[in-house]
Length: 328
Ligand code: NAD
Ligand code: LMR
Image 1 (cartoon, protein in one colour):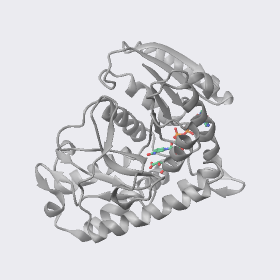
Image 2 (cartoon, rainbow, N blue to C red):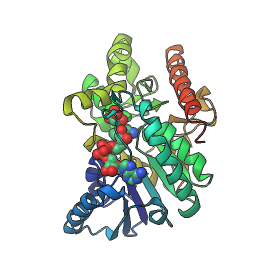
Image 3 (cartoon, rainbow, N blue to C red):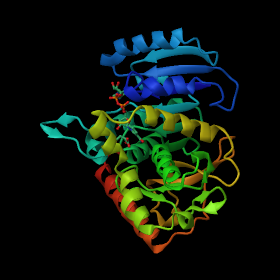
Image 4 (cartoon, protein in one colour):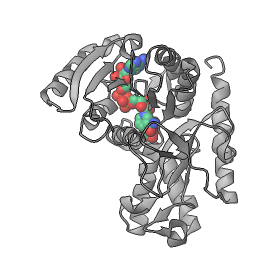
């Protein structure tokens, strides 16, 4: 099982790689060959981390290799976790990068090169999770550059789903594991639409249990939509431990069958489901059969309020796609 992780000397990877090395994440019992990728300037830092991973003596791991180029790293890869890219909050040309979409000019190009390499050298059924922001549009760039329909490209919205579950469990005083069918639609951005109207909590409809649309619209939605910014403000750096948890959970969700009656969340290429335009990467509720097939769950009913939310996030994704038309 060859697993490629880019940005391997960064904050997220420092938590993500140990999570991935725990038992039970991957369906197969094959040992992991970890291919860790960084830019040349960060190879020294990566070597230090590799020493720590060696010292952890994971029984799940067969080999750890480092690469300063993507081409060699992705040969025969089963999974590529594309974390490597720049987070927002940095100052570029005297201007602070405030929104994830402002990162497109800096990060977009990374995904052209990585997509081409994955399409040419990774396994036919390789699964790819884009974490680097703006994740949806970077995934679109990678997917188009790879040009291999058999490979499964996803962008991460699992963190938004975990955040939404945490807030809902606090509101209803339930355990996060009792929450089913919570879906994140659209972009991993302030326009995302976390849907509670189809969510089930301990067998009951969450919306009726909450019985407070004002809380949903004016507390819950902005909280989830702005949680990344809230963390950057408080921590002085973007979320890392929770992002790593979410990336690992996404791998696990694809590798194992989805529990009965539930969904998991990631953004995939839209085929027009729920009126999201074709040809953008949108968050959808998904199920996995644990054997490589991931499908959009299509039985959610959307109120006018939800439909308006989906339209807003769809428009933003189309605008982002137009901004990178030269790359796709
Ligand atoms: P970081 O700056 O700590 O680490 C990023 C690493 O990527 C650095 O070590 C850098 O050298 C490396 N890198 C840059 N370009 C690369 C390339 N072309 N190939 C390989 N490595 C490269 O950042 P981080 O906190 O780990 O965040 C990484 C990305 O994840 C950011 O874009 C951030 O915004 C994003 N993120 C996404 C989510 C999500 O939910 N989708 C959540 C949190 C963070
Ligand atoms: C997050 O949601 O925490 C990440 O996308 C980082 C960010 O820029 O907000």
